[in-house]
Length: 122
Image (tube, rainbow, N blue to C red; front, side, top):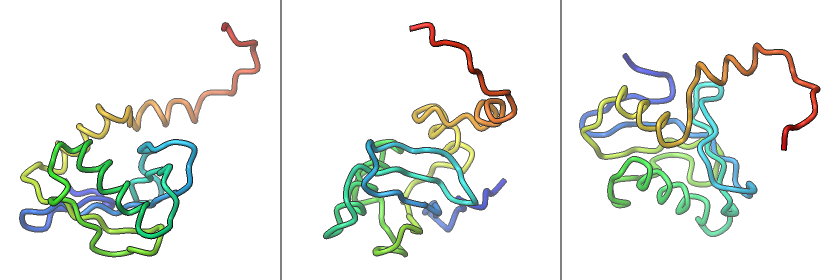
C-alpha cells in the first residue's frame, strides 16, 4: 500500500520531505500534511541542510550516502528524496517508527487526551 509521502519507483523509494532547518536538534518529527517532517540542526546555507538530510536518512535507513539523493527542492523546505534500496514501503515505515519513535497511533492518542495540568513528578 502506498503512502502519499512515500512511493516506489523502480529500485528507488521516493520520499516527500518537509525540512525545518536551524532546529534545536536533528530528528524525524512525523508525517505532517503528506510529507515526512524532518527537523535539522544544520542551517540552510551552502547545502549544509541537504547534506545533513542525506546523512540522517542514510544512517536511519542503513544505506550508503551515495544511495540517497535530493532529486527536487535543493533550495526549498519541500524536497523529494530518492533512496536506492530494495526495502518495501511498509518496511520503511516500520523502520522509521522503530528508530524515530514515530508511532502514529500514539501521536493520535496524545492529541485526543485532555491536557494534564497536574504537577510534574520529577
